[in-house]
Length: 235
Image (cartoon, rainbow, N blue to C red; front, side):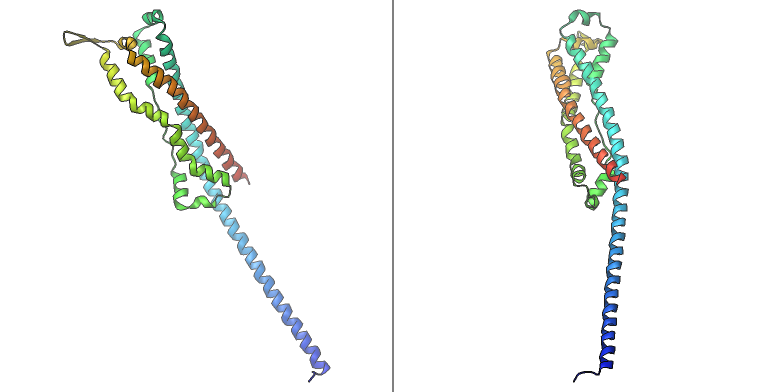
């Protein structure tokens, strides 16, 4: 049976009220979810910003250390090139003082190694926090920088592997020996050593030039990382 008109009106008002209440509850839930989502995004952004700021300091310091190593290798190359040119100029060699020759010899043998501090980076990768970095290119560069560093310094490590044996051999050649007795020491004696000339030209000139090219490429990559980190921090 149909409801009386008065009851039907009350029922309609009740339904409208109930629907209104449901809509308000849904809106409230949506607002709460939106606020919660915003809060989560803010927390994630704060975590990412803190990670990036720590990385910014670490990468800046590593670039400074790398620049010092590159400068040292350049000085070594200059000394080796001067030594190399000396092989074709005996007159200049004969006039050169022992101390100046020794200075060139020590300079070419200098082989600074690069030991970056990757404490923050290692922690971010091992903990999985690297996933919190939204910049995909930056994430890739950070994940691959250790491998790039190893590749860039392969030549430095090759030189380092040869140096002890070479230094020992050339050091022994510098002794003045008469009747089995050492009567003096003269580094300039190695000037005419074919091995010394070969290793200087190959290790300390040719390979060093190649190594410096790779080290400078690494520096560019690290500067790119730093620029991207700085850009992300400013967002």
